[in-house]
Each structure stands twice: as structure tokens, then as C-alpha cells.
Length: 360
Image (tube, rainbow, N blue to C red; front, top):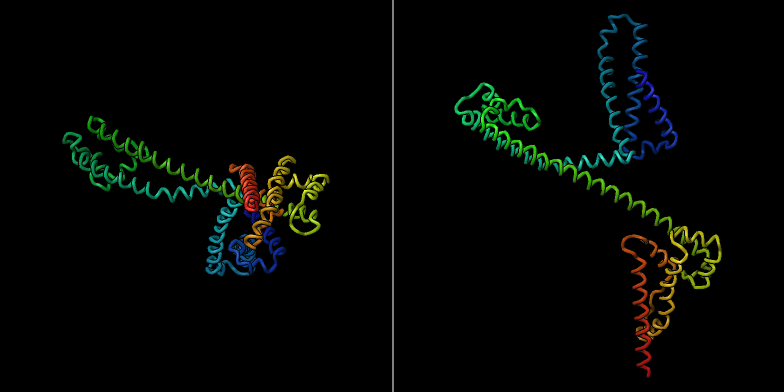
């Protein structure tokens, strides 16, 4: 009783804080957990505090006979007692808050889904073995024509054999006592145990383990993906603020002088290295690859504009920010970036050389 009153007090205090914080949004958000918590706390308060008070007042004001005839009050007591069982659903909410337990629950649920065909295989195996045991043991073919009362009780029909073999599969060896005294019965018993305990149960264990491992790995990958996305979003915001502060002309491009200004300033350099998670040599390598493309594309851009009359995209500091995404992952984007930069340099030089040859 003391534990229930303590828990009810905690739930009531929690609900009061949530009502004060959210106000009308507690009921208008249409969140199922809010309604569940409200109903649970109200019913618990009525069951533990209000109804006993009403019961005591009736005992003081009315006679005992009138109190016994009040069946409606007893029905209310029963309903409120059943409503207190709703508190079990809070365990689901608790499991979602504790990630290891929630992942374990997901693994169990996925394993149950995958077990359906293993269960079908087990039932088919038990049925086939029940038919065999009924004809060999229940009719005395294994026991040389002697049918004992125990054999008839356990294997006299297919339903009896099915239940007896299910018990045997779970470790009850008493059902095979009528046949273990015969060589044929021993072989039959050994064959059944190999098929069921070694094969079917091994398949069941492997299916459950594989699904739990796969589900846990999927949950871990999802959590890591969310962490990477949050870290990249935070990095983008920091770099945009940093580059926006140094980009005085507002052309969304960082020149060599602006880049050197960032590296000379201790605060900006520290912010740049912290936001990117790279060393100074690494960020210089990024800048050289990306900015050198812009410098070497200037001549080729003028040639393309004279030929096609269209402008090419410029490499701005948003390209630098985007190149930070997935940096350091297995794809090794730095190496790909270097290769791409070299190919563009070669393309620009070839265009300049071809244009020079055409002019000559």
C-alpha cells in the first residue's frame, strides 16, 4: 500500500508539472501518451484516495445494512482496480527511453515475426513423427506385438502422439519409457531427438539470433546516421557564420587573401579547425583543391563563354562546406576530391592548349 501511494504521488506530481508546462497543448496535441497518463493518474487517485474516503464516510453516516446493499459502489471499485492495470503500459514508454532495452525489444519482435515459418516447420515435423510413432509404437510394431498401457496412453492416436512428442521435445523422457527397452525403440527415439532437438531447435536458435543481431545493427546504424546528420548540420551553421563574417564583398567566394586572414586570426582559425574537425594542413589542402579549380577555370570559362555564350558555375564556400560532409568516412572523399581537381586542371589546360593551337 505504501509503495502504491508513493508511486501515485510521483505520477500525480509529474502530471501536474506537465499540465503547468504545456497548458491546453497537453490535451490538444492529440498524443496518446498524454491521454493515457491522465486517465491512469485520475483513476489511480480515485481508487487509492477518493474511494476509500467515500467508503469511510458512508460507514460513519449510514448503517451497515445500507452499506452492504450499495452494489454500485462495489462495481466502481472493481472498474478502478482494473484501470490501475493500465500502468503496465508505462513500461513501454520506459523501454523507449532506455535505448538498450528498446533495441532488445525490437530484436525480440523481429525474431517473433521470423519464427512463424520455423513454427510451421516444427508443427509439420511433429505431425509427421506423430504418425510414425502412432503406427510403430501404438500398434506394437516396435515392441514385437506387445502394447503396454503406457504406450497406448502416449501413442494410441495421432493427437496423443503429437502431444507426447511435444513433451519429449521439451525434455520429458517419461513418454518413451515403454519403448526404450527395445533396440527398435531406442533407434526411433534417437532419430526423433536428432531431427527435433538438433536440427529444428538449432534452426530456431539461429533464426532468432540472426534477427536480433540484424535488428540491433540496424538500430545502431540509424542512431549513427542521426548523429552524423546532426553533427553535419551544426558544422554547416558554424562554417556559414565563419565564412559569412570574412566574406565582406558578399560574393560567396573565399579568395586567397580572405583565406589567409582566417588562418592568421587565432579565433577564426580555432573555429575553423573545430568546426571541420581537421588539421590546418587538411583545411589548406581542401582550399587548394577547390580554389585552384576556380583559378584555373577562369581562362577556360572565358573561352567557353565566347563559344557557347553561357556562364559556368563558380566554386563558392558552400562547396567547401558540402565537401565536409562524410569526410573521414570509408569513401575517403579527400582522395576523390584530389582526383577530381587534377582531372579538371587537365581539362582546362587541354582547352587552353587547343584554343591556342586553333589561334595559331
